[in-house]
Structures are given as structure tokens and as C-alpha cells.
Amino acid sequence: MRLYSATRAPNGRRTEMFLIEKGIDVPITRLDLAGHEQQSPAFTALNPLQRIPVLELDDGTVITESIAICRYFEALQPEPALFGRTPREKGQVEMWNRRMELEFYLAVQHAFRHLHPGMAGYQVPQIAAWGEHNKQLALAFLSIVDAQLAKGPFICGETFSAADITGFVALEFCKPARIAVPEQFGAVKRWHAAISSRPSASVA
Image (cartoon, rainbow, N blue to C red):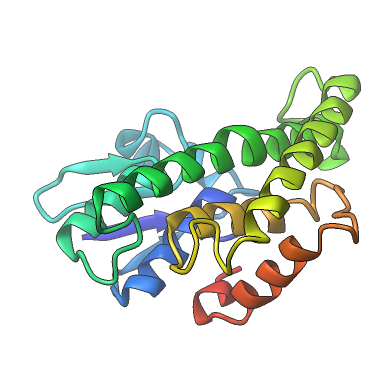
């Protein structure tokens, strides 16, 4: 099998972080997104959406979407469990991972695409007001995350999970999106520092 990725892209990074946390070694081909390698005929044949990551299995099966790829590896190698073990844990991880994607990462992405000068050629039209609105949405949700993290070391309590990976990658994406994390979010900053020290965080 082979993973097609690009660590500068958040979805590629979270997939690679997941693999490191699992201790799974997969051959990786990293695409040059700035050079539009994802738009090549060969890659488009793998994923018509021209997005990474893409997992190509030995039998030719192709799996796209970062969480779908992570779930494939979770089923292949259940331990360490990053999507929970009990029904309660699984439900909580799913809930928080979805929240991190839809309420936080998506807002950061919109802010980046609509405000960063480097995205002018990709996001047409850029709508500055929409970008600024999404900055505020991201920070509003981050206050909820801070309250959740005040209850325990990780998003879902005592155990590191896929929700932490998604949240961490989204938080890291705040820097290129030019979203400053307020000092008042002490629990978020403590959590970010803790995850930054994990070997998987070196994927960047």
C-alpha cells in the first residue's frame, strides 16, 4: 500500500500523525501542492477531487478522506485505540472529532482561504468579510474547547484520541490563517504544549 500526502496540508498531517501514534509504517509519496502535483493526470486518476491524502491498497483499492483512512487503520490495528474502546468512548470521540472538524478546522480553513494573500489565485473570489467572520467563529468555538480541556488532559478526558489530533492540527493551522490564540485560553495552551512534545507532532 502507499499513502499520498502533503504534511503542509492539515488533512495530510493529521493522517500521518495518526499513523505515527499507531506505530504503523506505510510508504509515503508527498506531493508538491504548490507545484500543483495534485492536479496531475496520474493523481487525478486516484482521486478526481485532486485532494490529499489518498491511500492506495495493494489490490488497487483507493481510500480518500483523512478520517476514512484513519478508520481503516484503526480497524486493521485496533491498538492503541484512537477512536475509543467502549461504546461511550467511541461516541465521545466521534462527537468531538466532528466538532473539531465542523466548528473549528472548517472556520480556520475559511479564514485562511479568504484572507491569506497567497490564496488569491485559489479562492476566487476571496471575501474578506467572510474570512473575518470565520476568525470569530473559530475563537468562539475555542472557548468551548478550553472549557472542555479544563476537565482533563485531553479532549475526551484521560486518553489521547483522534479528536486531539484533529484539534491540534486545526490549532496549528491558526498560525498561517493569522488567528491569534488569546492568552486567556490557558487549558488550550497547556494541551497544545503537551501534544507538541509527542513524536507524532514532528510531522510538519
